[in-house]
Image 1 (cartoon, helix red, strand yellow):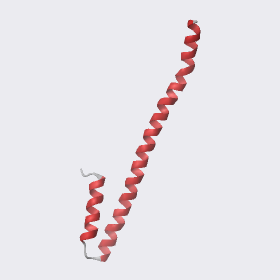
Image 2 (image 1 turned 135 degrees about the vertical axis):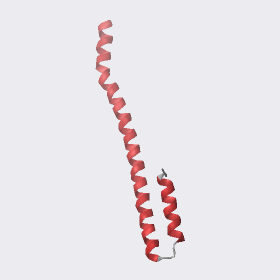
Image 3 (image 1 turned 120 degrees about the horizontal axis):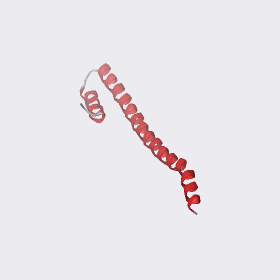
Length: 75
């Protein structure tokens, strides 16, 4: 399976190689849509990673009261 980056490169090459203006416009349109899709995909991955980090921190915060209670009980 080809990567998105390879597909974008191939579409760009096809846009450059074609002599038909209609086809050239079609390839350019596809190219720009794929670039936008790639940007959205990268942002989604970044947000997913941030959400994962926030979830980990929240889990630590949730455990904190229990740790404090155990520490106070040992005193």
